[in-house]
Image (cartoon, rainbow, N blue to C red; front, side, top):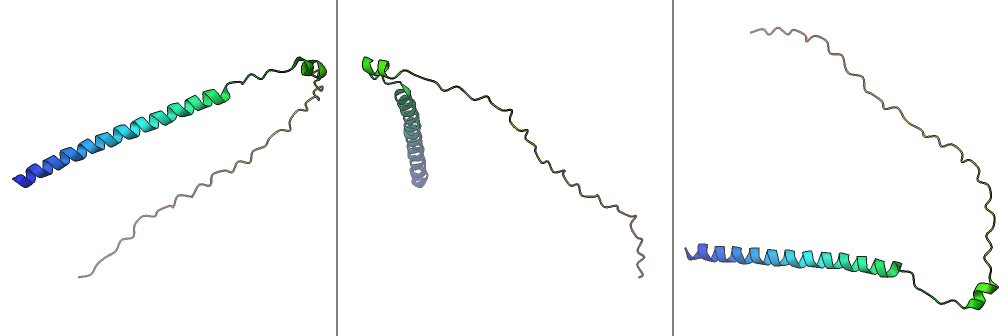
Length: 100
């Protein structure tokens, strides 16, 4: 009887540790995802760098004219036809006479 009580206590303790482990992993995963989102937000934010007004006047932006685009060549796809196995034709079964 005492073995049964000890087994039940061990089972309860095991369930408790499984729940604790689940909660720790759940928290760690969500913390990592939130940290990744924050890191991407900070990294993607434009950083303001003050430019000297002399540089703006000295380097006027010139854009080269875009060359006329040619029509792309058509793309052809090779499609193989699925091979179908011929169904075997069965004949009527042969009659076998057994001698006793």
